[in-house]
Amino acid sequence: MPLFSKEIEENGVDGAKRFSEQVFGVLFSFLLVITVVMELAMPLLVRFIIAPGFADDVEKFEMTVRLASVMFPYLICMSLMAMMSGMLNSLHRYFAAAIAPVFLNVVLIGVLAYGVYTGADPEQMARNLSWGCWALASSSFPLSISMCAAPACG
Image (cartoon, rainbow, N blue to C red; front, side, top):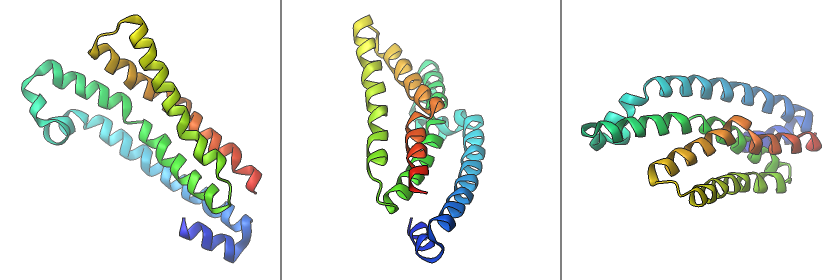
């Protein structure tokens, strides 16, 4: 964000807007490639890095791979949202950046409440939470809040 602030000082809001569009494009492309690679390599990552002790228990290992694969795309949304939030903060717009993460908590609390209401076992609860994370990421709702606030800043 120091570069974004510097761009505002040197080239005004229009220059900063062009800069942010370029950074957004590069970051999104990079994150997309990383996500595809990580999704394809998830069994190896779980076996050797994330949970090597689960390799002996086939059921636990497969569940860990599934859950990690479902939740990993969430990182794209959160990384882009963090970038947008930093830019909004540089423009002295704090509300959208502060409120967006609240939606993750609301969704996950709702998923937990639904699981308790239906009497879900821990395995089902884990699946529900991972899909709640995925649903939030696929809707990109927190990111869209930040993006909607950005045009108000120029």
